[in-house]
Image 1 (cartoon, each protein chain N blue to C red):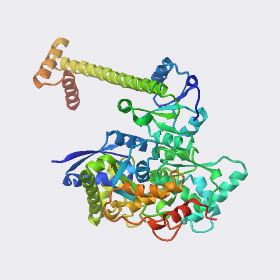
Image 2: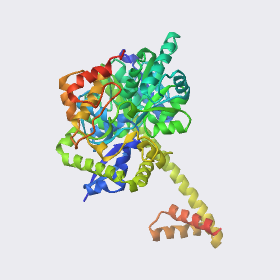
Image 3: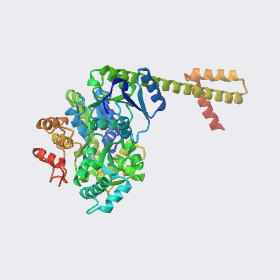
Image 4: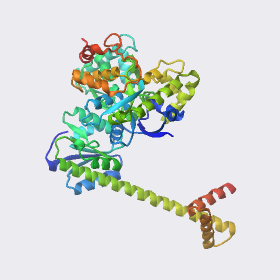
Length: 198
Length: 364
């Protein structure tokens, strides 16, 4: 690791998740960072990082390779510190925000504080954006799965009772309301029962 | 009424007493409810303990001493309240390097000095041929693994120019050997056994052959927490000691090893745990999880300071020596750590400078 001019700041995003890495890269590029490297393989992390000669390494708080960085900052000869514990720990709000977002940053000492803060702030907001995105995706997937189950159960009821689609749906909804359950749960019970009775 | 105690741990065999204490209710009998969360790195455990995500953490014993001395680069002092075990690491090598060492061995294969001398020859030849340094992995800058690896090499006066030490997360150790990224490593269980069972590694020496009764992990609290709520820290320590006492009863061996294996999951069997603990009636113990091994005292912290300073990570000073002793709450009489390969008998505090010199200077 070495010091460099602000505009030449070499930033490494160490992340096995390509989507999150690209979201973070775009955010940093918008903030004016030019030299951004993404490292997605961790078997030979130390050598890769040494080759890039990074000023800042951004890494998921939960990545096991954080301990590799702990070692690197100790033998690099340059005073560097994990930003999870950060910048003279005066900014408790930033530390908590970073831990909540799940990002940590290893920063070469001597970099301008405001510059580091900008980069860490961008990382926090992009990590949060990614988490929201993942949540939305999970939600969309579960809605899709619910709809499929309801359609399948509706077909089973129609066939068993020889009734129309609307009637079948109305029946399922009524049961759901009476039992205080979601219609998708009722649908899954119908599917399970139908399989048992096959 | 029990008070919850949030504890982070690394999935290692020496987190076992935490699993047993929680499963058998020793925590509740001490008025606590252990809430255990597995973690991914020592850095993460340290940071989450520091900011209060956890009340306590399964922590590398030297890292606790280093934090007390302010060696981590920021002030987040921790206090050890109980030892979670003594020893437990082993040095494992890639099969080709293990074979090369055997081929040159003069002496007993179980003697770390003999294998280290063979390694020294191999390293000297590689240097003469301008081959790249051999890489060895440990787990954290402030870890017994780091000091044990270097102590082993020092026994054979291995040329430091010809080896490079690096950190690798334990779950990646086997793959790193297989891929040729490292030639050997020092790690705790179950990772040596798992790498050996996968055919990636040969276990060369349990580190107990190198230095014995060395504090390995401790249950650490924020120093402030341990001061202000010392009774809670001591209650947690008692729960751990009771788990160890229960495990010492012969009729509980099977259940004890089963609970530890269950806590670890992923391919770890009760038989593997029993072998590591020397409770299978065949193996020599590598790891001590008995009740005596849960005691903590200032002498152990002093010994860890000597290891830290001998490896250039702290200044050598009476002041540091005295401060290091405060890193652990005293819990009974702990066994005396020793490094018989470097000096005779157990570690005695009055001789610390002499012992430090023996650890940090070449032997010939």
